[in-house]
Amino acid sequence: MEISSQEVGILRCPAYGRQALKEQVAIIAAALGFHLPAGSQVLLKPNLVAGRGHNGLACTHPEFVAAVAEWCLDCGARVAIGDSPAFGRAPAVMRACGFAESLRGLPVALIHFGTARQVRLACGERITLAAEALDCDVLINLPKCKAHSQTFISLAVKNCFGTVKGLGKALLHQKLGEDEQAFCRLLVDLLAVLPAGINFIDGVQAMHRKGPMRGEMFPLGVMAGSVNPVALDTAMLLMLGVAPEQSMIWRETARQRLAGARPEELVFPLLQPRDIPADGFVLPSELQPIPFKPLQVISSLVKRVRLLLHS
Image (cartoon, rainbow, N blue to C red; front, side):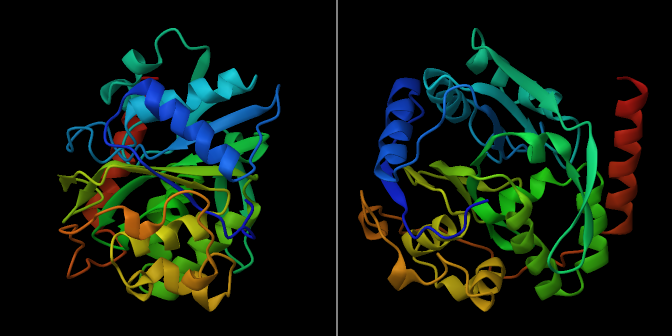
């Protein structure tokens, strides 16, 4: 994934109207100089944390994803949509969240990450990634702007963790979770092995107070994009009125001196972060441990085994 750009495109986006969303995707991409080659195989990677327990708010909105998919198709690309949910398989989560209705009639593939590939990161950790994410020509990351009870906030960098296959995410939580910096380094180092593309964040209806599920809707009314997820995260923190160093993931990007981590170096070809009112957006005051409770891991494993037996 490209992490040298400092540009972030920001536009007001008060509702999930398909045509307006697609037009804004095109405006942001043009402002960033991003061109999607005709014939390219694109993977759209939304946040699909789970199909139940959040009234759809914790996942990237299906109309947001459909708008990006239509824009890709208009560019002549071939489109697949996939993720590795915490619970369930991606196609089932998409159906539960209304993706079938939003994507009806569009020639896109709803995929489950079924093929594993071992990759060694710069931190030395060997992880199991979805081959479908590694083999696409263009990766379009579609995070949801939301609070997170373990990492404070979930934005573009955190959403890339969904390219880790299945139970591997929970196991990494267990293995590295006691060392906050080691866990965040893994999240940040993951960016270097993913294909280049672009990131568009769904901030139309953000989720605050709690996360990654069961939070409350906050009408942020924004779409923002960047080819660099680090720059996009920094811009969103500024927009929300949050000191970047409050985010443990941002602290790791700053420690590695990655492009996009320094607010004063960001470039905004459209709106500025201060142009989007975010008064009242609340993030967790106390964080929960990154490692899951043993029963949570066992429950997730049992659910995955049941899904495999019935698939």
